Image 1 (cartoon, rainbow, N blue to C red):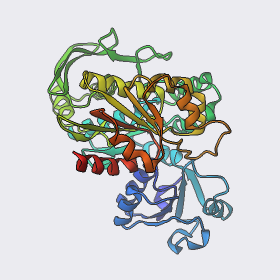
Image 2 (image 1 turned 60 degrees about the vertical axis):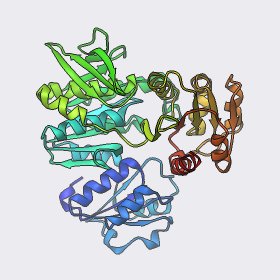
Image 3 (image 1 turned 45 degrees about the horizontal axis):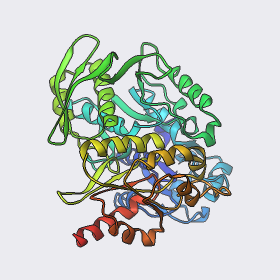
Image 4 (image 1 turned 90 degrees about the vertical axis):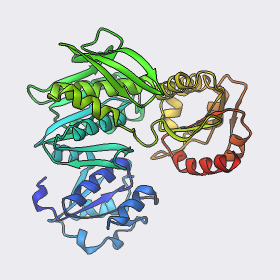
Amino acid sequence: MNLENIHSVYFIGIGGIGMSALARYFIAQGLTVGGYDKTPSEITDTLKKQGVTIHFEDDAHIIEDSFLNAEMSLVVYTPAIPKEHAQLNYFLSNGFQVLKRSKVLGEITKQTFCMAVAGTHGKTTTTSILGHLLNECNVKVTAFLGGISENYDSNLILNGTDVTVVEADEFDRSFLTLSPNYACITSMDADHLDIYGNASELIKSFEDFTKKIKPNGKLFVKNGLPISGITYGIEDDSDYSVKNIKIENGSYVFDVKTPNTLLENFKFNLPGRHNLSNALIALAMTVEYGIPKPQLAKALASYKGVKRRFTYQIKNNDLVLIDDYAHHPAEINAVHQAVREMYPNKKVLAVFQPHLFSRTRDFADDFAQSLSKFDEIILLDIYPAREKPISGINSQWLLDKIDHSHKQLVSKLELIDAIKQSTASVILTIGAGDIGEEVKHIKNALSIAS
């Protein structure tokens, strides 16, 4: 792929979080950008305000002329797009350069010092912390984020090209297109079994990813994972370890043991040991890169988080509403740990929208166990995303597996009434589907009620 000859880029699935970050990157390069998505969203609205033409109808005849020169146009698509998609097939049949998002990302990062964050959980938060640390410490960095940063109100940090920071996504083996200088692996829990078939194939894919690291590069791994590298962990004997943890005014204060010294008195404002672990690996990578501790401490203290990652929507003495993207049992367990640490004596209601029929089927017992830890549970119907229904797999089937006396399945139309009837003072909305679109309505209703 020769980007120098490209004048326009058309994205099929432009509203996706990773796709839109790439779209913003090409806008900043002065290219003409357009695309298709299935439905309007906050992301597509923002892109349209930046001058991007977006279609919500899958029709090849409505694509603008500026994208129809095969020699000067690049077409980028996401694996979530169905193979029968009309626009995708038009470009494939007419000699256009058509690439997956991950391939384009690999090409962009190839000529830079690339830091890649891999793992089945924690990628987005870790990537956003890492990008923020580098940016605040005056490194010329471009960071492609899998979520909207609260600090930048964007999924792209654009401040030069000496270093690129990317999420190394295991879905569809996308991360095998990258060739990072530094890489980390935050977790390797079984997931995406619709792609891999079993956990051992997923682990093999991570092993293949480690072989993509450039010569003289560095690999960082969460302590306990079955892959060798520079280890990190919390209050353990890892190469990089968090020590002397205190909670002050809802924030963590801690020290970091490195292979050579003890770096004291960091402050981090996100709750949850999983987030503390994400902060640690970002610090480890930046320390290895050579950034001094005082700069890092100041930068970390100013980090605000990622939207839909333990995001407070309401926070007062009487009521707390938190929204989180968690969609895997391990992620729900992490959210539960965080909320219990912050609100140890409060009743907690979890509103969960399962994501994908296959994931619900593959981890049903684990979901049931994770959700049963909350004081009250509300389930929504499964969000299908890219999948068609699987016979017998639905939210009622999952609800029946949950051993709990305060559980119910409701529709979106019934959701606000069901929440209002709860006596919980801490409410969590959880899931990777369109439950995030419901949060503003829930917030408004609860704000009026209180």
